Image (cartoon, rainbow, N blue to C red; front, side, top):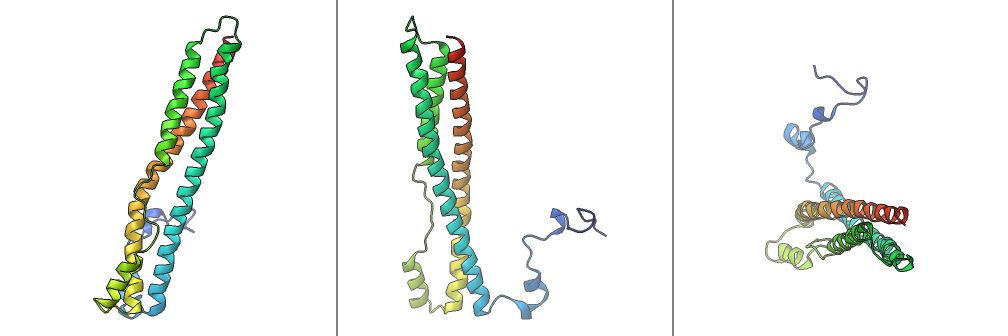
Length: 186
């Protein structure tokens, strides 16, 4: 007998057959071949693609905000030596400016137009119907599978954008730390 997590109330992750299709393999009369089954699958596929599009927009907006804050911090770092008695820039100033340049490059990389696919190709759907005689049910099924293929491709690129955002936040912290250390050395 398999043990369950959380005092036996919730199954452990390994106990849940994530990729299995019990209704399709055990009972053929409950398959998702009905009109509503594939329509639900298509709706869910569209929802996941829309969520990815929203995630990408959010990350790119946050990257622009980080760049604005970093620019403000860089102006303080760069402007501090002008007001000093010697006019010399310290090593902290150069380190902070270097962190700003790296942050700017990462932010620009996040806004690079990767090959994300967030829409359906109408020409492909017309081809399925006209050339192959696909029914509405078959179009819903194939389109849901087609969109999920794009979801997995988008997911990989979106992961890199998320990592870029994490790096950019770290670089902003380094830049601000350099500003603080530059102030301490004055």
